[in-house]
Image 1 (cartoon, rainbow, N blue to C red):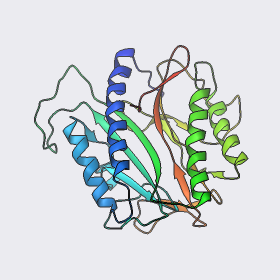
Image 2 (image 1 turned 180 degrees about the vertical axis):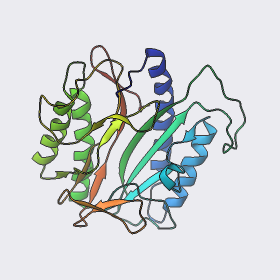
Image 3 (image 1 turned 135 degrees about the vertical axis):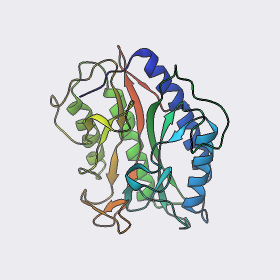
Image 4 (image 1 turned 90 degrees about the vertical axis):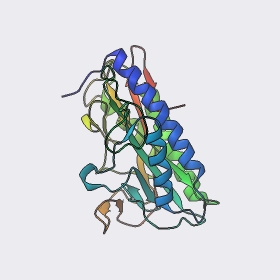
Length: 266
């Protein structure tokens, strides 16, 4: 079932989304050769709790961190560790938060929960170059980012979700990259993952019809090689089967009367 949000609920999501975007910006500034992914996660966790929010991924299906850090061939769900970033790597930073929660059992910050403000989830991601990267890596990142922008431009009431999915696929493949098919975007808000699924491939005129009040996590995941993936040895990350580079961008958006509103931006 697709959950339609009220304008008031979307406003709460927009406030949380703004905080999420600011946190991701700050984490991205710390990406440099020699930095470890666990250090990036520490920055993210501290900022999330200080904002009166809660990390959405921490403990979710056993995930051990707040921030997903996916390097090179890792598509999504890379678990932070002592691994050091090196020049020419690319890293996907994926973060979700529940906001507002005020003070909870795991939050080191002060404050109390406001029962009048029901908390909502938002979800966002970006891929960052570590130092100087190859021309192919740079183009891959730019293509993933542009495909998200194109998809967002397609969203408005009355449009089939398949039109949005096809738009991503068409652009990515025109740049001679592939879209990951076994992982998809999703509805988001009351839950971290809601209906509908949002694939990055599809056919125009198919899928659910977008309606005002829908909130969606649109997230192109693309690869420099083939689209097949496999799970990593740690059981968390998914990586390209052919070890080709992968890039990932994501925004939470709300369908509005005339188009859509990107909730996870500053």
